[in-house]
Length: 449
Image 1 (cartoon, rainbow, N blue to C red):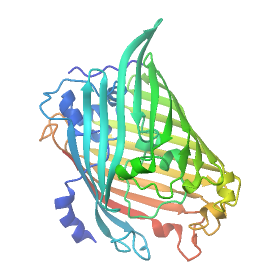
Image 2 (cartoon, helix red, strand yellow; image 1 turned 60 degrees about the horizontal axis):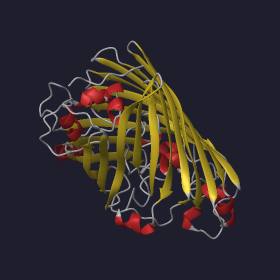
Image 3 (cartoon, helix red, strand yellow; image 1 turned 135 degrees about the horizontal axis):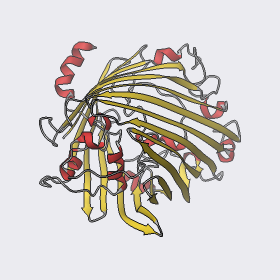
Image 4 (cartoon, rainbow, N blue to C red; image 1 turned 90 degrees about the vertical axis):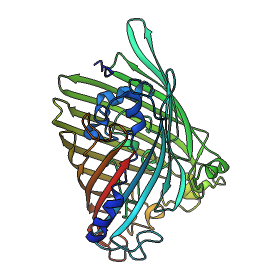
């Protein structure tokens, strides 16, 4: 397939939406990109709002964020505000977080500044710095600096490039990998499962990596690279607390292979990705290292038949093998080795690039380990699974939208239904709390400008 670039408590909530309408998702649909290219958000994003990419959006990212076509009058800087009203089926004793109550919490979750756009011919960047309104701290968030160009190898055409980034899969083109996967957003004021694979939630912001990539004849994508841990001093300067992190020893290799094809309005991709890292558990270097190796499989389907009806399906599976000799020696793990697996499947329908309805299923399961999980799971099991549903409304971001390329807004309602949580349906913590007590209803508003 060759993808062508384009030619050129409810009362509180009601009050909050007056301010909360000034909020947006941490996504690539930033106004500086739209201004640079002259294209509306809907050209690159399903539903006129990130991070779900269309084929055009994937091509824009592949080629280094360098396309022109807009008036270019604005600097490549954008801003974001994000707010949530979070309700869980039962309150969280002691509060959902410091400075918050046990339930029905209104939060200004994020305030971000972005640089996004062309640096010079063949090179561009996406950078996000964020103030976290729940943790009450500012830090660098996401970084992806790219250089890309076209090349020919015999009879094969290719786009080749390099990415420097700070979170494995943040450079990826597909929404079936962790950094930009579904659900695309979530509240920080609801309980979450105790376990996640390293590539999903383990290294972002504490590492810096580089990878080389190529798209061969528009259908086969390959990438290889590695990540190294930033020093404690560097992390602290960037607003990241290194305390207690599992520190990468040496270089952690990363890989990605994907095939894509389009048949009329039907787009398909299938691929694999992974990382393997030696880790000092909790930064303790006295007992040697653990090793975690993640192998992922993923697939995407998009129906792109007309502007009024878009269908998407994103699916991923990750298998993690954990060698935990250092953690076992330090008393942090009962077992010397474990497995952890996760799967995530989400389908969505978007109408008129404005209304999006999505539903999904997620599951995490693996070895019982009282040393590793026992603080949160009474039986030492990491197993959690559940269903997600979301409705989004995005009034702007189209060709005929007011405010042109300078503003975008999304309002949404998200529900998470836990069928199992940290190893059990009921009394998973030994204190009588059930999985369903963590069911979460979140009303959110985002704005980018």
